[in-house]
Picture (cartoon, one colour):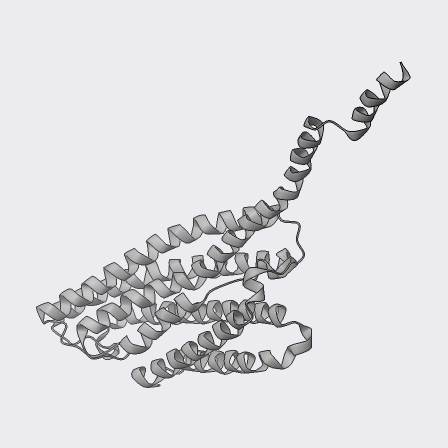
Length: 301
């Protein structure tokens, strides 16, 4: 959170727009995510494929974390609006030192909890992607997942240290964490998409272990550019993109589970329909035995 002259009309309007647009976008995306979560659970329960329990646990874990984070986002947004109002009345600059003591006691713990849950949510998403890479490449090539596993571990440590260390410079800490997140996402995307046989074939758990975190990587790249900026307009876009990324981190894998799960159900229903069509064709065509009987009958007469 940068120190900006909040009493300036343009700065205040941009800050106000960033807060409301970010929270509104987060609510809309959360509503979409709830519907996708219900559909994902429904499709997974109907599947009889090995490995669906792993996805069910991941879906429920991300839903609990996403719901908790949305509630915390609502609380921190309400407090932050009161902070803006208090700063406008006092004429102070926007920064942690200018927070009223009565609001700091509630804002800081809630903001810290929101950041921690977001970090845990990222870790869950990365671990599920790492498991997908393991299934894609097979147990014979375990060495391939060493690089993403190392990146996930180091990135998680940096994020949690950045969240827990209050006196860490804002720009310095965020840029490192976002850079590590981007590198981790790019490596996971590369290892997932290099093996194209999973996209066009495979069976079992490989069918619904598809995911495309490159969209979330785009949000990470945008956050990397916008974070730590002194420009109020860029800070506004950073707030909006960060609010959206808290929901996109759950929407993307859930959407892929729904898509692949529905496709898997369609594939399972096709073998049950083919015998019926074939039986109708067989019944419509005269058999060779019946023809032979018709030809032999006149000779016997």
